[in-house]
Image (cartoon, rainbow, N blue to C red; front, side):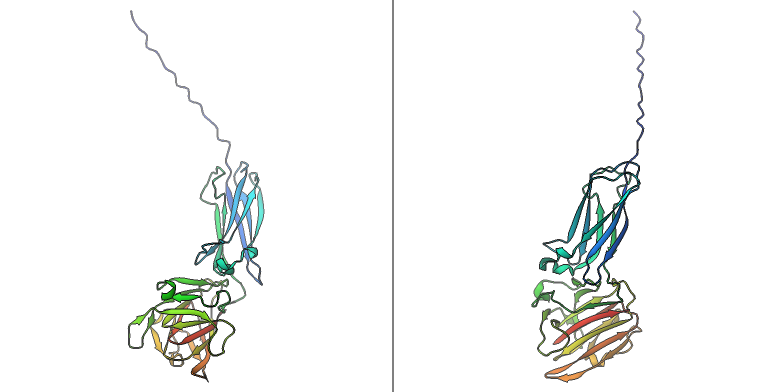
Length: 307
């Protein structure tokens, strides 16, 4: 008996795609002026399908990061048709807390759309946007609070390492700790502290350096820094000073004997006698990205960068 082969016919069913949602942060603006702590974002669906429900996170990015009371504002969007957009606002001011340094460590705002992956999108890689926090006033100052609280330690007692960023001012100035250099060469990494100075100068709390350098980075202030001014109190020993990475190694000696110019930046130091030493003002004039300063018995206050 002959057998006829069976012919199997495979049917291919083509499923037409009906389109997908595509969520983006179309615009992000930050108002950090005059006590405001507000971010506003336009969230758009540039796809062709309704997105359905999704979350939007406004994150206050910090350096260093808070271990508690992370500054974050969340919104739940019930739906967004293709081609539509919605404007959302986040007020960070109520989130200020000692555990997050009263928002002083925030250096930028990042908006994340659909962080939980609730929406199927045609592009999953365009869901965030960041904007630096800047005062926009042409001036940014660190006056050492509070915050930080009196008694805040830096350097070796706090477990820091050279290069660690220990403070980020809302105006965009970052402060890190660095090795201190001896006049004779070599150096050490000792301590710093927020405290009321033993001789009145500056305003309120000040930053003390005990054989430790503090490096101030002005590159995130939002403007070209052409002048830096700070007050100091010198009650003994010698100081370190560096501008834009020069001199190499850092200048070590009396502030009043600092070279000028340094890296094309003019250095002017005033001094008046006080009990046990002297106090005055250091003014740097030129294009300034970074500055290091430290001493053996040195206090500094009101580190201001100006356009």
